[in-house]
Length: 208
Ligand SMILES: [Ca+2]
Image 1 (cartoon, rainbow, N blue to C red):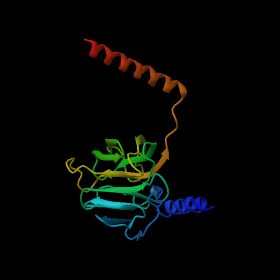
Image 2: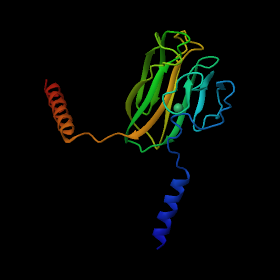
Image 3: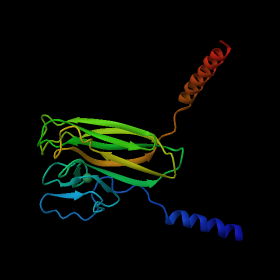
Image 4: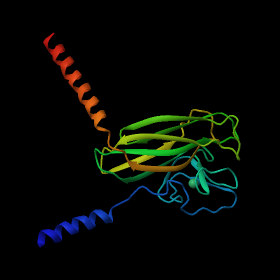
């Protein structure tokens, strides 16, 4: 009985600290709506669940430019190079898939870049805003997977400060995080074969 009560306590304690990934579409928070975008400075938590990094970001209403999901989206460069980060609960060693929609501020038609980090994953994504407009943003679907290194993971999207897009950055919307699908048995078989090959080549090297 005592053991059950203790287990329950652990379960409840775990739940009270739970911070699931949230607000991936940037619809929640204290958006003023006047004018058609808010410039949100570093350290602000106006956008529910997200921390603003770098200088600032613009939080943009669909009356200014087309969003990809819901009413609001992000220009990662506000009044300077900015970024967003969110920390959420993960299981160490578990693989997750992140999907997001990427575009770029068409007011300055150029290639936008965004450095994306989560767990063991780090990559710069590019979007060319040439030929796009506020009414035709050209939102593109992006996806990657990462392995959680701890029981919390920080997902960040940061504008590199050297791409010349100071006030006209990459645009972001519709971020989601899901547990990655388990690989098919065939994939495991291939991974096993690869591993056997590696062991064999090691053995050869040791013998030589
Ligand atoms: Ca949105």
